[in-house]
Each structure stands twice: as C-alpha cells, then as structure tokens.
Length: 235
Image (cartoon, rainbow, N blue to C red):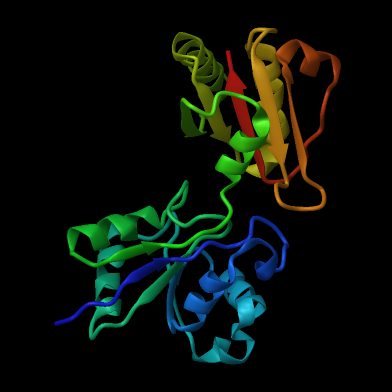
C-alpha cells in the first residue's frame, strides 16, 4: 500500500500574517492538504484560515499531538498516510518538531519509511542566535531548564561552565509566565563577564533583542512579561 508524505509546515511566531514570514510555496503546499496533525486545533484552524484556506476549514481533518498525546495515539496516526494521502504537521509557533511534541510523529515516519518533507519558516532559536552576536559556530539548545530554584541554579551553573569550557553559546527558553523569574536567576547566578542575550517577540513590531554582559543587566533591570522569549549566554 502506498504511503503519503509528512510535510512539516512552519507557522508564524506571533500575530503576523502568514504571508509576511512564510514563503509562498509553503502556503501553496498547505493548500493542497486536507489532513493535519497539530498541537492545538483552534490555533491551527485560525492559522490556515489566514494562510488562504478560509473557505475550506470545515472540510479539513485535524488530529491533536501535544504533551498529553500518548505514544499509542501517535502510532495510530500512521493510518492517516494510507492510500498515498499526505499529512501536514503544524506546531503552535515556528518550526514543527523543534522543542515541539510533533517530533514523535517525525521519528515514527522515519521508522515506517514515510517521506518527511521540511518546509522553510521562522525559528525563534536561529533568529535569536543570528541577532545575538554570540558564537554561531558552536552552540547548543538546552531547552527548558528546571523550574525549582535549587535545580535551576545548578543548571545555570552547568550551562555557564560548559559555555566557558567549549566557547559554546547556550540557548534556552522558558514558559512565558516564568520569563522574568528566569532572567532574574540568570543575572544573579552568572558571572558578571558572561554575555547574556534576551530576545523577545521575534519577527513582531514589539521585538526586543539585546546582548550585554551580566554586569550590565544588573544595572539595567528588564521586565519581559509574558512574551515568547529566547535566552542565550556565552561565558
């Protein structure tokens, strides 16, 4: 039985119009599909409507893949590719399967011989690295670090130590409502000479991107608020 393809369809990082941040061919591919695996159905419907599928939304098939989806449910999505049907994977923002539970479906498709097709779109991680002025030759994405105070302080210390040893930029993110707590912990726990980048609301008119030594951040307190934000450090 022939199998379709899995298209990894990027989405805007914020409230941009899709055409402002996504190439036309990406939107054209999305318009050819009638089945999507998404992190949140309501968000995906709104995105696809703005991407040019407005009159077809009621005819589209949506399946959820988020942090609550079980491995068995993900495995069940293999049936979606039967009879040559292709499927689109969409995350809440940015690139599918990068810091995103959709990676489970991508891995499964590789194991089952289903072709995976990544499409071009915005990545908050790469945009932040590009704009940081930090080392773009060697970098690591640490993802979310622990929320508990003691564990978080230890993680920050480890990241700074690794950065210094390898001259490697460390990239991390946080749930928006904990942005300011993480920034406070970074400023308190890092050496004054360590470079720290704060990159919030990338691609939006309200974008904020600055890199300074931690000693500067101590003298210039910043409130980020509940905005999507990426943090980078280089010791």
